[in-house]
Image (tube, rainbow, N blue to C red):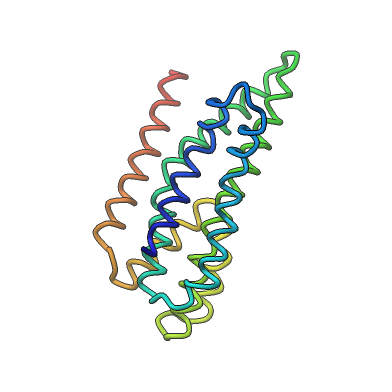
Length: 193
C-alpha cells in the first residue's frame, strides 16, 4: 500500500504530456491534466508528512527509488527534447526565438516534477540520519542533491548501494542509463557525420 502513491506519481508524470493532446476541444480538461502532476506533488507531501512518518527507512527508500528510477526515461527524453528545441531556437530564422519559450516551459515543468519526488527522499534521509545510517554531512549533501537534475538520482544510487539494498537493481539501472546516454550521443554524432 505505501508504494501506490509513488507508482501513481510516476504514471501521472508520464501522462503529463499525453493528456493535453487527448482533450483538444475541452480547455478545462487540458488545464486539469497539465496541473495533475503538481496536485500529486501536494499528495506526496501530505502522505509523507502524515502516514510516511510511521514507515520504515527501507519503505521510504523503496518509495524514493520507485519515483527516481521510474522517471529516468522521462528525463532522458525530456532532456533530449529540451536540448534540441534550444538548439533550434539558435537558428536565425523568424519566430525561432519562440522555441526558447518551449525550453523554459519544459524546464519549469521538469523541475516541478523533480520537486514532487523530493518529500520521500528527504524523509528517508532524515530517518536514516536519526537511525545513524548516514552522517549529517552526507544527509545534507544528498538533501541538496534532491533539488538538482541528475544529482538526485545519482545520490540515491550511492546511498542505496551504501545501504546494501537493491544493489543489483541499482547497478542495472546505472548501466541502463549509461547505455541510453551513449546511444543518444552516438545518434547525435551520426547526424553530424
